[in-house]
Length: 88
Image (tube, rainbow, N blue to C red; front, side):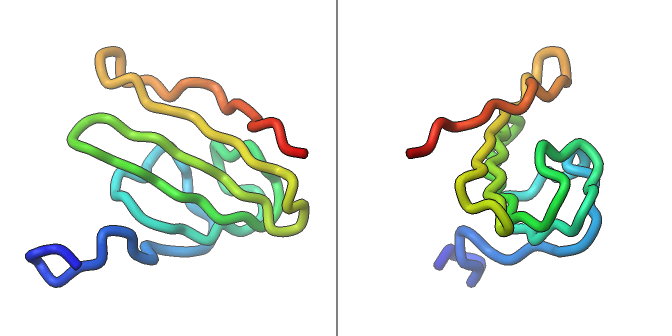
């Protein structure tokens, strides 16, 4: 727990959320067809943010083998393309 009484990784929201607008570290439950998502069904999004640097991971709930990540380039304010993590 942080000095603010917050856990470092908290539930932050759920529903249809534009992934490009998420800046806070935490866990998000995404519904079908969230904008800028690499998965078009229910999934969990984990966001790691440190100052201006950000990384997003998506875990598919319907297809557990689906795992993607992307990062944010602050110098040109651009999200990089989603990359699939190879799973066994």
